[in-house]
Length: 330
Figure (cartoon, rainbow, N blue to C red):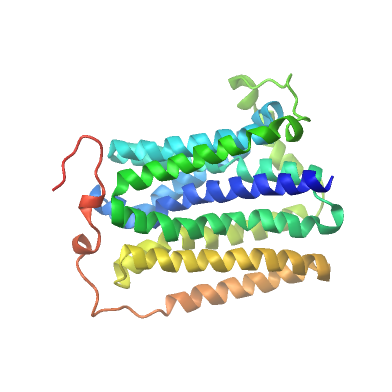
């Protein structure tokens, strides 16, 4: 049993990191993308909304797929869809960018439910919260890698190389966990229908809403989770663009700040999971986290503009590093 949960944790952590790495690469290089395509810097908000829509679509309608194919297969499918999303960027158009944002969101979608299903079946009850926290630490870990790897990679080697490396990483990770499928996908339902009528059925969409009635605490917890997600989504979407556009940082410097923010999340998720196991007071912990998050956002807002270093947008973001397919460098 020990080996089973450790292998399960390793697989889910790896795929959580990869899914987050792929999804977070989009806002990290947003100043480059929007400038190269002639979009306003604030367009990253629209792209992030499309990315979130893709994840919501999977969470709303992906239940039958998860039941039929199993969590490991769905993690592999999510990685492949994310890789396709990054490759869509090579088309170098606004519609392709929108498609990429949606595909990256759909690709991220399987990671939370599939990973949770695997760990729920294998994690020892005494340490379940900590184990889930370690797995969830993969989300900021992937964001940290996006800040440390994607932005410098684009600056040093150009968009095409960075894109290919990200996609290859996702596909290699999907291949690495295939050996776990016979064991971790053993409880899947091969007879579950996954045609359009089954996936898009009203009952499928209603299932998550019905689940909110299973316990009185679920609805307020969901409301708290939505508030946290809103703050997190805004920070993830706009931090790099805000630092480049209004604080005069380079793309690599802003990516480093983004990586530091994500790195703090890695430590915090594991520490807070350990604390939850020890205190047994999750509501108090959530309230403290909410207060800390609000204070951190206000503190970030006070960061002064580096006016002496500020340059026109076109000089801070190199158009030459973004080369859509079929175009020449200018």
